[in-house]
Amino acid sequence: MWDERYDTDEYAYGIEPNNFLREQFKMLPKGRILSLAEGEGRNAIFLAKQGYCVTAVDSSTVGLEKAKKLAKANNVSIECIHADLSEFNFGEDCWDGIISIFCPLPSKLRELVHFKVESGLRLGGVFLTESYTPNQLQYGTGGGDCIDTMQTKESLTKEFKRLKFSHLIETERDVIEGTFHTGLASVVQAIGNKCI
Image 1 (cartoon, rainbow, N blue to C red):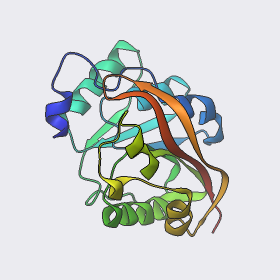
Image 2: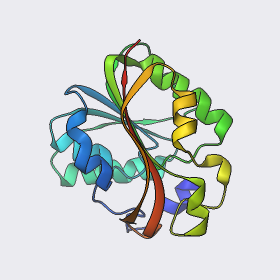
Image 3: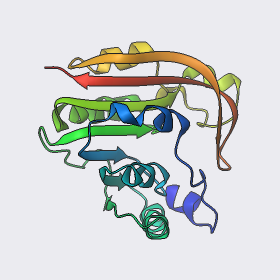
Image 4: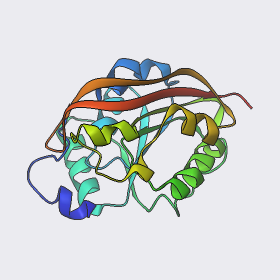
C-alpha cells in the first residue's frame, strides 16, 4: 500500500513538517532522534535542519528514496532504514528522542512498538507523537476508517508506563498535509519523558 501511495512525483503528505512537531520540537533533547514510519521524509528533514541527528525508519522503499532526494535538496543528511516496525530493533537506551507522527498501527502491534520505544529511549529521552482519535471517523479528513489504529489519551497512558507526560491532549485542529490530510481533524498529541 505505502509503496503505491508514495509512487508519484508529488509528496503524498507534502514537504512541510507536521505542525505539532514544528511547534514542539524544542522539547526534544539535542542528539539522536528516531522517526517512526517517516514516509517521504518531511519530518526527519525538518529535524535535521534544526541540528538533530535523525534516523528515519519506514516499510516503504519508495518513500525512503523520496526522503533521500528531499534531504539532498535541503542540504541535510538523514539515515534511512527500510524495516517493518514489528521487526525493527530499537536498541536499548540509545535514542535522545523518538517521534511518531500519524503512524497508524493496529493496536496489538502498536503496543509492541510502544514497548520498544520505552526501551530504546535514554533516561530523560522524549517521545513526541500526534495521532488521530476515533472521533476522526466523523471528519473523514485523513487517517483511514479503522478505529483500531487510532489512539486516545487513555490508550497512550496505558501503553506508556515509563513515561511522564508533560503534554497530553485531545483536540480538534486543521491538519493540511498534502493530499491525504485535508482539513479539520480530531487528534491526540503527546510529549513524554522517560523517567524510569
